[in-house]
Length: 216
Image (cartoon, rainbow, N blue to C red; front, side, top):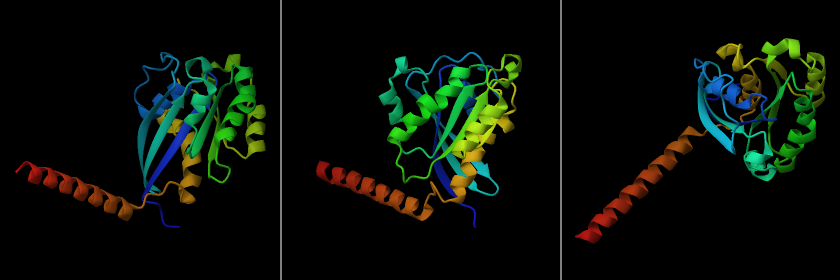
């Protein structure tokens, strides 16, 4: 297939509080900045930002990253679920040193997504085990996590927001991006974009001209 030259995607990062969602997101957005690792405050509501990717094969990808609160005290489950709508992909994080955060993947986070997701929409998931730098404290085995991911047809990856390189941090995102782009999800019609832009500019010019005539 011909590469898609321009794609817009929305990814949501979900999981329990203190699993490292904000740190992972920050490492993706600002790969050279490691000063925030371990110093981020709990997310209140959500944070969102754009990541622009220029890929030799898949062209330009505009990725909207939505980092959601893992604690309902900061926004409530219903409010959090609002951010899930129209998402193309979900990174589901758990802490390998916290067994409950792993259990909550299926007990809390997946049911919340399914409750608001359009069953006909194309949407991808990736299970991410964070904090591999604390392997001595591991409470969730790689085998159990991989088995869970396979049961849902998801890819599984382990990383450390502290130690994983910026390039490797992109791996879970690319595992979601590639099948979506190849399926044509989020494809931008450049000709239509230009037509709408010209229409908006013409309407703006017409309004400005009309206002000038009224003042004469």
